[in-house]
Image: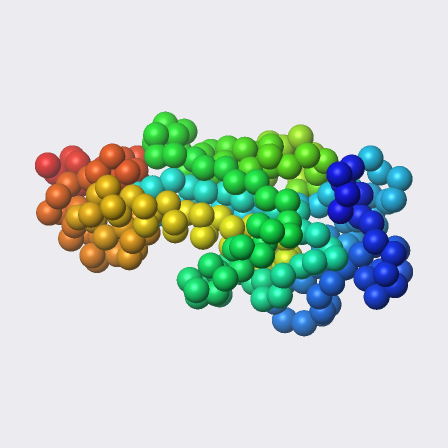
Amino acid sequence: MDAAGGVHGDDPALLDESGSCFTGAMGESGPDFTIELKAMRRLGKAAARRLVCGIDEAGRGPWAGPVVAAAVVLDPRCIPDGLDDSKKLTPAEREALFTPIMATARVGIGIGEVDRIDRDNILQATLWAMARALDQIEGVALALVDGNRAPALPCAVETIVEGDARSLSIAAASIIAKVTRDRIMVGHDVTYPHYGFARHKGYGTALHQEALERHGPSPLHRRSFAPIAALLAAR
């Protein structure tokens, strides 16, 4: 895509019947580029903004650490192989896809820190992080958002339940968000070594519960979450 946000390229192998570029097999199991192509056709060649991005988050459920959102606009001429819902990929597979996504796509990342989660609640912090991720990409006409809650964005929004299993753009966003958050939590493990953050990434595992009972909450723990609030109330 060029600096103005339009799809370009005249290789017939990359053109569908509308003149839009694409790669990747259509109709196979797993996410594909169908939703994005249909949106591009609706927008039309004359539209000032034609970019379609996928948005997803990682880290709504953990007891500790931030929630991270990513917005990704894939280059239809160069979509990395192997994109899928991040939950269906191993950590090694996600890491292997992170670099090619960053190298070939337009990417924005938003991070809702723990103080925002505790102040505004996890849903609002997530929607805020999604909006901050999109802020980093200019020219987006339509945002495809995983789930059923739409953030306030300066473009059209389409929510898609289980979108990371249907849209390659959302799948790519899920990978960027997950790898980014996992790396953050691994870094926090150095600062707070007693909690096992590198292993469970802040999720409510038995190991995490045991560490909390032994050491109490760290500054990374979400005090608005019931397990942490209960632990504090009992101390």
